[in-house]
Length: 81
Image (cartoon, rainbow, N blue to C red; front, side):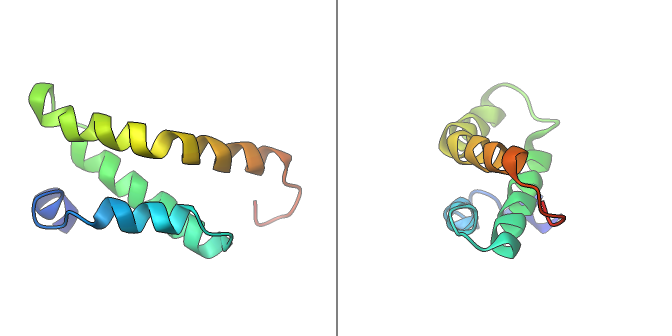
Protein backbone atom coordinates (compact mmCIF):
# COMPACT_ATOMS: atom_id res chain seq x y z
CA UNK A 1 0.00 0.00 0.00
CA UNK A 2 2.88 2.40 0.63
CA UNK A 3 3.86 2.24 -3.03
CA UNK A 4 0.38 3.39 -4.08
CA UNK A 5 0.92 6.65 -2.24
CA UNK A 6 4.65 7.17 -2.70
CA UNK A 7 5.28 6.10 -6.29
CA UNK A 8 6.43 7.86 -8.41
CA UNK A 9 6.56 11.26 -6.68
CA UNK A 10 8.11 10.28 -3.32
CA UNK A 11 9.91 7.18 -4.58
CA UNK A 12 11.21 8.13 -8.04
CA UNK A 13 14.06 5.60 -8.06
CA UNK A 14 11.82 2.59 -7.39
CA UNK A 15 11.71 1.70 -11.10
CA UNK A 16 15.50 1.98 -11.37
CA UNK A 17 15.88 -0.37 -8.42
CA UNK A 18 13.37 -2.74 -9.99
CA UNK A 19 15.22 -2.80 -13.31
CA UNK A 20 18.53 -3.47 -11.55
CA UNK A 21 16.93 -6.46 -9.83
CA UNK A 22 15.52 -7.75 -13.12
CA UNK A 23 18.88 -7.45 -14.85
CA UNK A 24 20.80 -9.71 -12.48
CA UNK A 25 21.59 -13.38 -12.95
CA UNK A 26 20.48 -14.20 -9.41
CA UNK A 27 17.09 -15.95 -9.35
CA UNK A 28 16.10 -14.45 -6.00
CA UNK A 29 16.87 -10.91 -7.21
CA UNK A 30 14.94 -11.44 -10.43
CA UNK A 31 11.99 -12.77 -8.43
CA UNK A 32 12.15 -9.68 -6.19
CA UNK A 33 12.21 -7.51 -9.31
CA UNK A 34 9.14 -9.28 -10.68
CA UNK A 35 7.37 -8.69 -7.38
CA UNK A 36 8.27 -5.00 -7.68
CA UNK A 37 6.81 -4.86 -11.21
CA UNK A 38 3.65 -6.53 -9.92
CA UNK A 39 3.39 -3.94 -7.14
CA UNK A 40 3.80 -1.13 -9.67
CA UNK A 41 1.10 -2.62 -11.91
CA UNK A 42 -1.25 -2.84 -8.96
CA UNK A 43 -0.84 0.88 -8.26
CA UNK A 44 -2.09 1.69 -11.76
CA UNK A 45 -4.79 -0.95 -12.28
CA UNK A 46 -7.74 1.32 -11.47
CA UNK A 47 -6.31 4.53 -12.90
CA UNK A 48 -7.35 5.90 -16.27
CA UNK A 49 -6.40 8.64 -18.70
CA UNK A 50 -3.60 10.96 -17.75
CA UNK A 51 -3.04 9.07 -14.51
CA UNK A 52 -1.71 6.18 -16.63
CA UNK A 53 0.95 8.17 -18.49
CA UNK A 54 3.66 7.01 -16.08
CA UNK A 55 2.46 3.44 -16.45
CA UNK A 56 2.94 3.57 -20.21
CA UNK A 57 6.54 4.67 -19.64
CA UNK A 58 7.04 1.82 -17.19
CA UNK A 59 5.77 -0.70 -19.73
CA UNK A 60 8.12 0.69 -22.39
CA UNK A 61 11.04 0.54 -19.99
CA UNK A 62 10.45 -2.96 -18.63
CA UNK A 63 8.71 -4.97 -21.37
CA UNK A 64 11.83 -6.12 -23.22
CA UNK A 65 13.44 -7.35 -20.01
CA UNK A 66 10.25 -9.08 -18.86
CA UNK A 67 9.95 -10.77 -22.25
CA UNK A 68 13.55 -11.97 -22.03
CA UNK A 69 12.95 -13.38 -18.55
CA UNK A 70 9.84 -15.20 -19.76
CA UNK A 71 11.68 -16.59 -22.77
CA UNK A 72 14.47 -17.92 -20.57
CA UNK A 73 11.96 -19.55 -18.22
CA UNK A 74 10.25 -21.38 -21.08
CA UNK A 75 13.50 -23.19 -21.87
CA UNK A 76 14.38 -23.83 -18.22
CA UNK A 77 13.98 -27.34 -16.88
CA UNK A 78 14.92 -26.80 -13.24
CA UNK A 79 12.33 -27.05 -10.49
CA UNK A 80 13.04 -23.43 -9.44
CA UNK A 81 11.80 -22.12 -12.79
